[in-house]
Image: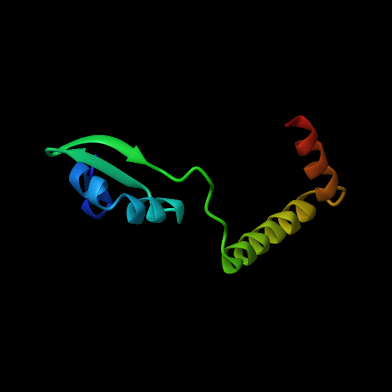
Length: 90
């Protein structure tokens, strides 16, 4: 497994910069903690990163294209009903 060294902080760095490091994690950065060269822990944010508006727009365009493709394959396909049924299953 390859580890990006920019994601690794030592225990000493963690102890000396805890507040700054936690702020990075809170903003979505995942970090790995090492002790004497051994990887010992992973710090990940609990909250999921919020999607940027351009990512949402891109996703919605892909969904629209997928819906149009399904509609061409099956003219009676109702995407709204399909989504509602999927939500009920969860």
